[in-house]
Length: 262
Figure 1 (cartoon, one colour):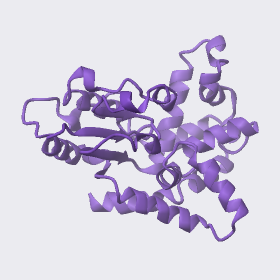
Figure 2 (cartoon, one colour; figure 1 turned 90 degrees about the vertical axis):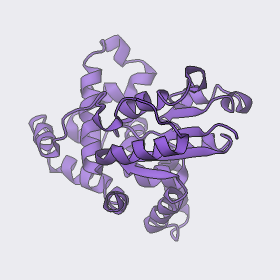
Figure 3 (tube, helix red, strand yellow; figure 1 turned 45 degrees about the vertical axis):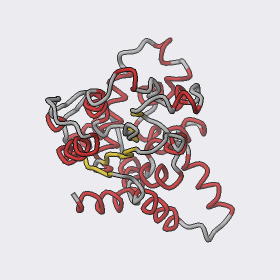
């Protein structure tokens, strides 16, 4: 029987570092794909990709269709508001560690923005290319990613919507639900014990490994109300909070569905 391949579609700020650490304990080191982001994944040919058994990172789902079965493909969700706030303050913390020269590098445009834009500019304004970059990571990310299966799906789906008024947001949301139903598992960040149970069953692993539910790599405090106050202390006005509410409107539907299931 062919060895099981594991594909973890890691959404930013959903316990991905802890899960990746656990997943690596289930396979031999040589079977772990070195690509953690799309820019690295693009450099691997299909035969090279098929030589690995574990794919874990901020990766386009569509690029991993070539991973041969049997495979276990899953993702993890988090309360959408909590995810946005955690992501914002994590990026601020990481950006503060960089020099101005490092912040000006193209790969650090998001970190440059989080330090140099006011809260209102960061969430509602900024130059067009920065706005697109930020919205791709914040604006109803669950819906657009799972509907279009890529990190830049929001741009393409909105372009289709502009050209075809019958292609509604409700249609995009339904596409996301339809695609999510094809995954082998959709878990929530507060029930990682369910993920560990299913991974052990799928892989047949019975040995001792770190308990996934108690791994807290890169974990920040879960305090959405406190983070909202922190945003206000940074100068955020009602424009920021209104935008955040709009950024989770459809993702809340996905979150409610899957959190209720777990």
